[in-house]
Length: 114
Length: 112
Image (spheres, rainbow over the protein chains, first blue to last red):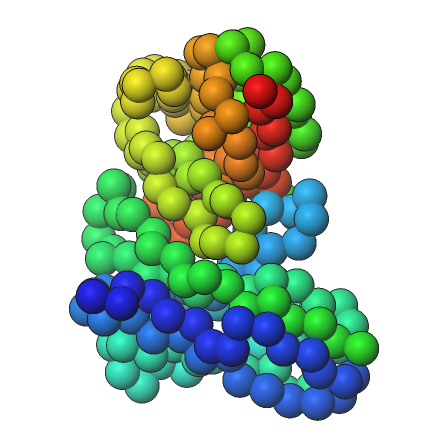
C-alpha cells in the first residue's frame, strides 16, 4: 500500500495563477481532509469529505475548492493564488465513524505564492 | 479562531529531563489525539484518549484527558534526542460535524 500520496511536493506560483494539489489514498477510507500548516498555527482544516460526492468546509475554506468524485481522490484547487496561501498543505484520510479514527497523512506539498 | 491552544510553543531541554506539554480548549471534545511530526513529513498518531480522566502510557510518554474532556497533557519522562519533533494535539468535535481540529503545536528539541 502506498498510503496517502500527494503531488507535487513543491510548487511556486505567481499571484493570480491557478493550480490543483493532488491527493490520493489506496486504503479505501471514507474520510479525507485538507489541512494547511503555518508556523505557530498547527494544522488548520480547509475542507473535508465524508464520502464520494460529499464535501464540507473547515476552518479556513476561503480561496479553495474541492470535489470528491471517487473514494480514492480528493484534489484541492486554488482558483487565484494569493501570497497568503503560501503554506505547507497536507492531505489526510481516515476510516471514519469512530472516536478512535487515526488520520493518515501524506508527505505534504510546500507551496510558495509570489 | 483556534479552538485548541498548546503550551509551551517551543521547548529546548537536555537529554534525561522531564517535560509536560498542555493542550487547552473551552470546547468539549468527543475524543482527543496526540500526533508527532518530524521535519518534511506528515504527523503520525501517538495515542487517542476518549474518556474524561483517562490516562494512557506509551513507554516514557504519559497522556491524560481532562475530566471535562476540554484539555489534555503529554508528559515525557527522561527525554531522549529521538523525542525531538513537533507535538500536536487534535480534538474530535462530535455531533453532525465530526471534524478533527488541531492545536497550535509544541516544538520540542532534546539536546544530547
